Length: 312
Image 1 (cartoon, rainbow, N blue to C red):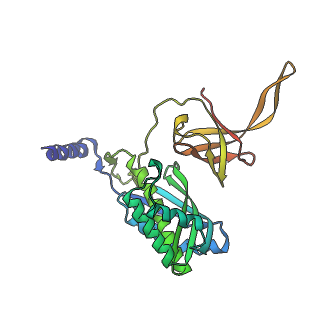
Image 2 (tube, rainbow, N blue to C red):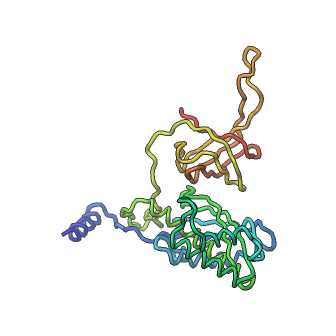
Image 3 (cartoon, rainbow, N blue to C red):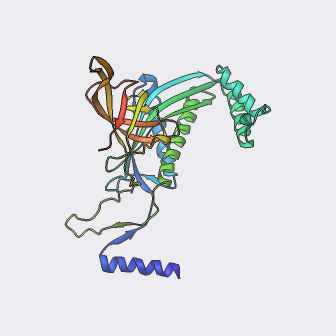
């Protein structure tokens, strides 16, 4: 009966409204050419990483790579290699000791306790290090944007794997990065409403929708005043010193401020003057910090600058 009711509803939509209901399907992603700011060595990672990203998206339950027949992609994925290095896999003594403790040690306190799965993973990684002399570490900055220009997330990822040769280590590292990036994309997809999307048919005059735009969560609550500090930076990405407890939400626009002299009243310094030097958009809110992307600036943004949201 429920299935029959759904069918009747679809027929009503088509006949009464002249629209064709299209239920949630894999969303098309345009994987942009990878960028490299890590020098000549970093360029080695570009074709391998792109191949793995395309493969990982193709295997995703929520996304697919944009096909040549698609009028437009619903999302744009840009990836920049920011750091690249090979190393002796056995040279990181602290890492090896930590893995040994996790795989074979006895927990002294409750906080030291590890699950059976964690022990197994640590033992497996130790064996990989023992069998493979070369390590590869690649850092990337990733921006995931919808086709309206909204930043869904901007995040930094690090891949660190070993292999019998430099080529194998790099292959494993790029595969690990692709898995991390796709997992982040899918975690975002899980937060989107699972509702049918209605696509108007083309009437021959170009009014038909060429692509379905993925719906993003809408914020209804009125924003509250916020003031924080930029604690770290990576290119146009800033890390703000406050997280979920601050009330920040993804999409919030903040003004970047810099101190510009003293406020003097009746001969007393009572505060600091501030000059607006740019705008930043919040792209991710975590427990202890938030991530933003600089959208505009009139001066170089620095660690220690203030970010502020005012309530009119």
